[in-house]
Image (cartoon, rainbow, N blue to C red; front, side, top):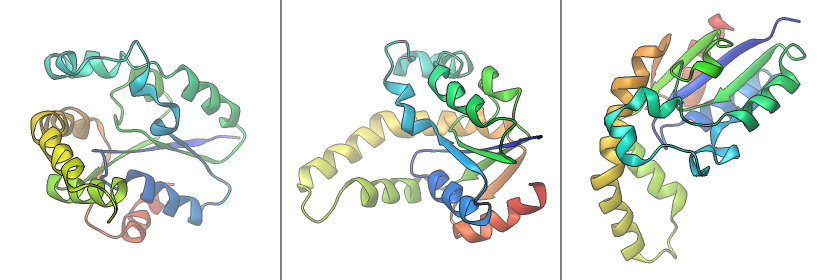
Length: 177
């Protein structure tokens, strides 16, 4: 069986996971693997912030995808579609050779920040923790996601508006599946 492989890429809180789940509803026979489920960015050999800013493509390829690829190969050739919630499009050389379609979900930074705050915090969260996150966003996250968009977006085959409802974006992907 030929397995189509589709990556959904974009910035943190850009809507990647939501779009993957929407596509799974339309394709229940598909499997979804998520970068976040493997804590790849927390592994000891993950690139540093400074290295990512200096050499983004080298840094992306420094991420160890061993665990993700192990699970990928369990399904590859056995299911018609694998969705990979993966922030790096086609830029990681190990996964790139399998990708049939790389989708970039382009979400404005302010929307991504608001989604992140809504996802990670609630009415019981101390206001200072939210302010601290906003400061972290300004100092560290925004430069990374700005660089991410310059580096990853050009590697993708299809760019979708991250403000659109996930159902709208899923329908735009359907002709490629």
